[in-house]
Image (cartoon, rainbow, N blue to C red):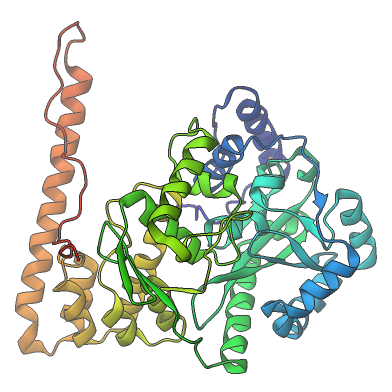
Amino acid sequence: MDDPSVALPGGADPAERTRALRRAHTAFTRDGRVEDPVRAVIAKSWRRCARARVSPECTPRVELAEADLRSYRAQHPLARVMPVFRELVGAFAAHGSHLLAVCDARGSLLWVEGESATLRRAEGLGFVPGARWAETAMGTNAPGTAVAVGEPVQVFGAEHFSRRVHPWTCAAAPVRDPRTGRLLGAVDITGGDGLAHPHSLAFVQAVARAAEAQLALLDPVPPAAGDTLAALGRDEALLVGGGARLRLGRRHSEIMALLAHHPAGLSGEELAIALYEDESVSPVTLRAEMSRLRGLSGDRAPLSRPYRTAAPLEADFTVVTRHLAAGAVSAALHHYAGPLLPGSTAPGIVRLRRRIEDQARAAVISRADAGLLTDWVCAPWGADDAEAWRALAEALPPEGRPAALARVRDLDGELGAGSALARARSTARSTAPSHAGATAGPTAPPRRATYPQPARS
């Protein structure tokens, strides 16, 4: 099976893939239809671009003039790891006619370096320091999409939303503060079709991890405590600071969690995309929500232009990601009270929740520690995790395995029965007569939190 994170499947003809993607790009920009061979990560990005009203003919805008750019770069945390980027990526980029690019958390390019002829081509495109390449400005592109979703991404040719960028291929990975888990920006390699190889994506991920390790060595002391936000394992977040405790409603919980995750701030457009599933929601709706939140939170109310927290805000989920980044799995699990705002369907929260849970789960399983695995499977969110139960059975001494193996068999049986029931229902629907008044068979209940919510404070 092809890896969906890789832009060009093994054995695929780049020229034929390019033609197919251009046809798919035309179909989407003309009538919003997603066709093969567009990958899911690209389709989701294209839809975000459409919601943000990005034009496929868009051109980049330089937002930081030379003097402002120099000052901003000098104080940016990623300036301290530019030697790492240059050492690991610089020679590769220069010899391969590729570019090394580094952007901040809002998708603004801070450094673009590489072979001179390739740099000149990039300048003609507007891929230059100081230019904004966020998804909301330039559509789907590796650095902009990597900071939008907080995950590594590879973009090949016509997968770019802007037609101007179709001759290019790029791979980027986000870089996070190892102390807080907050997004600092992304490191990117941009060039020709050769970058569609799986190795380029793995390489840029390794470079990002090396930079985070260097940052941890340079500044290992965590920041001073300030206001805190508890949002794990609860549908209504708790904001604590200044001697006050404020229980937030669901929408305000989502807003504060997103702003805690993006301390540099979000534009109204970016926050709306992260909050609302319905693309027709008016900007007035968001402004009204922010007005109500300001009325509730007083001097801790978010600021605007861009929307951001008024003071440093330490969220419980950033504590978890910080411990995971440092390899402190036991400490991370101690602070992991459950999925982030489990009842939320806000797109930005859903992505963040899935990433935190996947990282925590993967760390626990890979550690193969019986105590940690027991804590995971005994928690409500891990009780039905067959892979974790299987890992626990392997980690236990022989005399302790039967109970864990029995649970694995139960879960495997439930999964098989569930798959058989789903197939039976599908067959029944496909063979049932179609006529007015016909009723559908039973459907699965909506997903909800399966563990107790914290008592209201």
